[in-house]
Image (cartoon, rainbow, N blue to C red; front, side, top):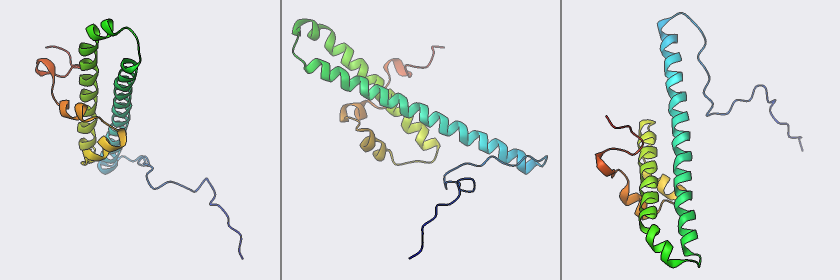
Length: 141
């Protein structure tokens, strides 16, 4: 029976690693470098938006958990509806932005996101609906 040996780490490159283009003065290499930068930015944006979605869903979940604890029901009722509606809207905005960025990267199946992130139906139903006709994180013109 033979012995198992791992590949040397210096020559191992995972299949999904992006390799930067080699420097050259040709037009093709400049276009390759630009494509590489674009893909890097798309991946970074997708990561940022994924983290924003996770944070928005966590805030909504934490709020719901806090509301289910026994305590001052009168104060909770006064602030509860508008605060929760704001959290649902923030989560749906984050979901919408994340889905749009995924589609820009060529990842079309949004159902996978909903399943993996555990997005509530209430948030899904508000996705793409904005107060005042514009997204919250855009500045007024």
